[in-house]
Image 1 (cartoon, rainbow, N blue to C red):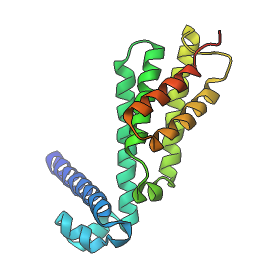
Image 2: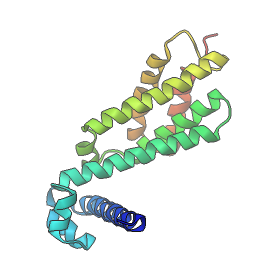
Image 3: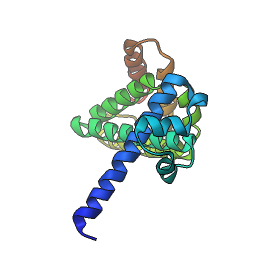
Length: 189
């Protein structure tokens, strides 16, 4: 098969998959999880049901794939934030602020309750913990952050503390939570 043909088929499959993910998430948000059917998804996406079943076995599988894509996008966003900031302390602050704001914006829905149970979430959480741990270790080496507590423990502290961002009423409250969390990371006097 010519290379162009393979690229075209691959691009088409990605486009169908992306359209299916986006359509399903929109239908679930609009009508609720329990009322979304494979037939509705196929019709709204503009593909046949048989084609849809070639991609996904059921609605839950589509939503899990959508969530995996969202999580990967958030991790990429955090890496970009880290790479734009200056020193170790600034990078950590930028990442923690971005993470807290993501948590604040994406919380409390029926969809989140279903999807935050998956294995992909556990893997992403481990990735995020390692990501923050590395920033903490770097900051401890430069003296910007405390070195009397293991970076792995401090990473857990950060993630647990910033989980509270999901229930806060405003972005200003999220910023205050990040500031308090960062205070706990500074070297003892």
